[in-house]
Length: 108
Image (cartoon, rainbow, N blue to C red):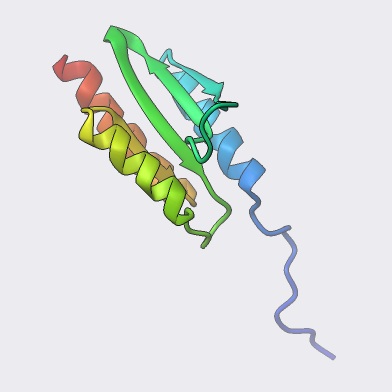
């Protein structure tokens, strides 16, 4: 008897995504601070401080989850001020953020 659709690996969690982000940021000689603001709700989860004075604000979500409307407003506000700000819900999304950060760092 053959069993089908059995997962050997546990499903990816938000913590897994966040740890991957932190490792990738550290590999670029940056720091991914856990960010919270008691006076302002819905700020992104991570403040990434990169070489050459570059900052990025990253909201981390579990795979397939989207930010709330308030979180999207915060991301858009930060973007309108000229900061790199986005949300990630997968390893691939983080890889794209890292690619953009590398371009910023090497073009600064």
